[in-house]
Length: 232
Image (tube, one colour):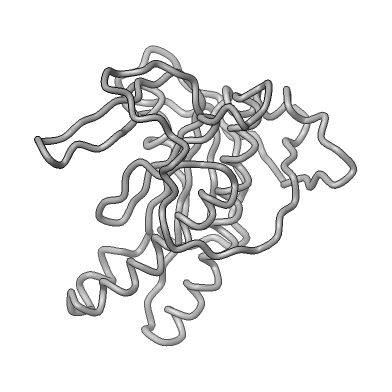
């Protein structure tokens, strides 16, 4: 396949989670989106070595990097917990005629931004705290149900379905500093690859098929490889 392309963007830091443009349905709404999962690698060692009060500002910085990249590239954060985040892309009418292609492009750009920006944070943590850390990212495009879940008074909009599960499993498979994407994301990227003269290509490699336990068939997957291999 031809390497997917995304538009080049400038750096930007956003500390809050954007929610205004996502409609909160009273009943579950079915739609096609690109789901992004990202999580922190090295968190177990970090939690063992540092007092809980010292971990809070580190996680705040980590989630700030993820949320900032998500908002910058048109995504919406749906869930943050522990050391991971779930976001959706391609939900807005403003994404244009082909929301699937726009969402896939936005998710890939956001994932790349997360890897790039957190690499600087990880370097500082290594120098100041002697801690090795990184993030892994997984992308999958497909049908999801978007609805409210949670106890009374604490209900939140979230995404549910096989697409969410696959994106989470791809994130779990990714090595630190690596982004994995499924064939549905790759197809949408190809569909939107007309691009312009300002488009920027990322190195995307096809990997061996990924077998997910419980699914009937393996997945074709691609990756933006890590700049350096870490042992987690």
